[in-house]
Structures are given as C-alpha cells and as structure tokens.
Image (cartoon, helix red, strand yellow):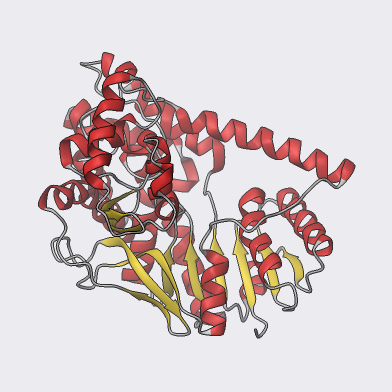
Length: 437
C-alpha cells in the first residue's frame, strides 16, 4: 500500500481522532503515511498529537503524526480530509438548547434537525465554505470525509455548491441491524444476517433484513417490537413505534428520532415524555460526560501510559484502504440524490449503499422507498434544503422558513414565536451568525 496524507480537521476531538487515525495505525502499520492534525484549540491539538504518537509507538506504526497550527500547511497535498469540527463548541450548543426552551420548545440532541440542527449548520457552513476554497487550491483531488452533524445539511452543501469530492459518514448504518436484533432477543439470528438500508442520514430505513438462510426477519421483528413496547419501558421505544406505525425500523437512535417528527415531544401531552422514555436535554449531558471521560483518559495516558486501541467500526480507514489499494468495500454513504432514490428530490442528500474503490465513492441505485417512508424523509429534507439556502444566500427569511417547516418546531410554536426565537438565537450566537444580520 502506497503512502498517503490524511488531514484531520478538528483534531481536538481527541477520542474521535483516536478512533479514525488509530484505525489507520493498526491497519497500515508498515505504511509511512502522514496524519496532519489541525485544530484552533492548541491545547487539545497537542493532547491529540501526544495520544496518537503514543499509539503509533506502542503498535510499531511508521506513520508520521504532525500537529499544524496553519490550516493551509496541514491541507497541502492531502489525499483524504476528515472533518470533525464543532463550530462554537459546548457554549453554542447550550445557546441552541436554552433559548428554544424559553419558548417552550424542548430538544433531546439538537444536532441534526430542529432549531439546534438549523443553527449548528448556519454557523458551520461559512467555515466549510472557506475550507472548500483552500482544498480547491491546495489539494483539489482530496476525498472529503464529513463526519460533522447536521450530516445531510453540511454534506449536501458541499456536494451541491463546491467541487470538492465529498461523502458524509455516520456510524449508525453499520450498527443498525445488530442493535435491533440484540434489543429484541434475536441474537441467534445475527450471524450471517444481511440487510438493505436507504433513506436520509439518521432516518435511513432498514428496508430488508434476512438471516443467513435468507428468511425474512421482519415478521418476527414486528411481533417482538410491539410486545416489548407494550410490556416494558426501554431506550428504543420511538423506533419500535416507527415499526408499529410505519412498518420499518430506522438507523439512528430513539433519542434522536423523537425530535425529527411532531409526534412525541409535545407540551400539550407531557405524559408522552415518560411513556416513551424520551431523554430531554440529552446532548448537553453527553457533552459534559465526554469532557469528563477525556480528562480521565488523559490522566491514564500521562501517568501510566494506559492507552490501547482496537480497530473501530468507523468507515474512514476502510475507505482509505479501498481507494489506495482498489480493493472494493461497501459503505452506507451520504451522497447527492442523483437518481438514487426515485421518490426523493434530486437536490437532497441521501444515505444509500456505496461501493468504494480507486474511483472513489460509487453510490447504488435504490429505487422507490415505501411511500410513508419517503414522506417522513421529505419532512426532514424540507428543513435541510432551506437551511442550505439560508447559508448560501445569507437570507434571514430562509432561516425563519427552515424553522417554520421543522416538524417538531411547527407542532409546538406559532409563526411569530418562531421568528422571534430565531432572531434571539442569531443575536445570542454573536460573531458566529454575523453574516445573517
């Protein structure tokens, strides 16, 4: 395998950098590739460099781990770029939660859809626009691997309005079937099982799932999901409700999907929160835990050198291997809907099976989704496309429109409150939203 250069944008996301680059260090120990790390936080950047250097030495990898303070220098001649930034960090996330809460709008994760997802995209796209210009100049052939949420909005922007080769990557596709079968006590059907998944990010549908002998597992899945929701409270109740009401399971978690529709988080029916075990304000709690976990892991590294790595299920290292060696590999990728899903818009970013080889990302034609699934996806796509339009045009009216068409927001707030809330969020985010004033 020939050497390559991987640029990691947002390398201060240390645990994620460990997963992606650590995977490469384990898989290609004899390849002297360069991992070019960049982050605006110099302390976190150095922590990531130290951790990855330790892992490289521990496993005898020949890679060069280099931390850059100049983004352009990190980008120069890169073959692959991993995007893992969070513009505004934890402070902006709290703004996205606390201001909507004043208007009676509650969220669980707020990073993919809803008001939280909209505003996260609006402050991120201008940064990606700058980055795209630098990629075009300094590494135009690079493959851009976007891991940042809101996935469909950011990836869709890059695919429609830049010439950068881009694919959006999430880990929910590869764990979907396993999580479902284990959750329903069907582990014995997991070995050799096959599935077919398509839709949009965080709401892609498990369209078909079969055991190693080709038997359709959905009849038993539907029966068990209905029984489990009726008999006990658990952490995946919303997706089991999808099975009951729509006929199919979807890729991302119930805490995510509880806020992608108008059905479950409703101030008029507060009992639904308890009935479906919905964790409101989950993402801020998760951020605090991640910070604490990293501090603990950092102590272990500095004091005792207690750090190991096993290859994760993230797609990045598998994609790099497939592109560099031309050994095909299949992923679930987020790509522009160039006739892939017939009953979704052509400018939507969809999540479909893709073959990866030396030619890059090659998406597969899916055909038509069941009409109820396409309809659910379309309610989210409306918000995604309007948010992209707002970021592209810097037109505040499109921000209002994106929030007005968000299923959960529209179910809870009046149009006047939606406009006022958006205005307040724009002001509260300060310079991150200056271009929309």
